[in-house]
Length: 360
Image 1 (spheres, rainbow, N blue to C red):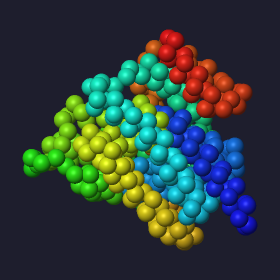
Image 2 (spheres, one colour; image 1 turned 45 degrees about the vertical axis):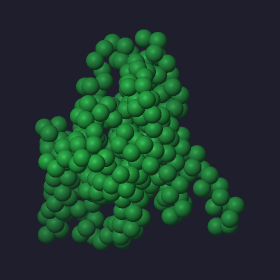
Image 3 (cartoon, rainbow, N blue to C red; image 1 turned 90 degrees about the horizontal axis):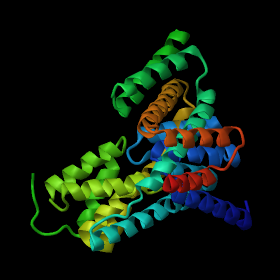
């Protein structure tokens, strides 16, 4: 590959993930759905099977799943440089938007009302997630063992069982199937930007699960242990992370700014995302080698089925939380028809949903 081809690939990676960083609302499931549409359906960077394998891998390591998927897509397309480009271009727009909200919050004591805008976006996101779930499930749900495993994990997830036990259980069950087939400390001084970085580095290195798990970590570290922010400030920070595009983990940017200004925001952002870059860069090549082992391949097949089931459970919960009015239902139906029947670009639908939310 010559320099011109490499430059073209890096430019494409940057444009794809910058767009996702600006328009990817709705949390990890929605982000993964939009990535699948961009890199599998539209650009054919990789197959659906490969995409599902990568999704399963991100479920096994700590950190934000959708950000790790972005990093993996960049690595798949453009190597280590592509990994860096994809991750940073996905994170930076969200971090910048959150930083603006943090500045307004600190200096004016409130956050602008954007709830109505997001109310219009959420039904669109639900339609996007459903479309991606349908496409991916057609690829992975083949054979009675996989369908049975999917059903069991989905039911247990809806019952409240956490992700990691379900992934491990699914791996063990699929392995068995294949074998049978064969035979309070408060700190008085303010936290420094360095300490903010170190705390978020620890969180990014060990955190599995959803934004709700992140909330628990943040409360333990910054409210209870260090007393650096109040419980209300924590809830406001999480709210900003939820209704802005891009990774929910940019909540760290908001908290870092509250504690130590711009250096704190920078330290928090780098701290919480740095482990994802390192884990993907070092562990995914090993994961690829393990995939070729026949016995370990059975474990990974179980993890893939469980990952799709977990995505389905999140979709159901998202639907229950979103379709609470006839307006939301109407936007959802319109979005689904335009996506599935007319193949309208999801970015345009998100913009349209935001405008409808403001009008309604």
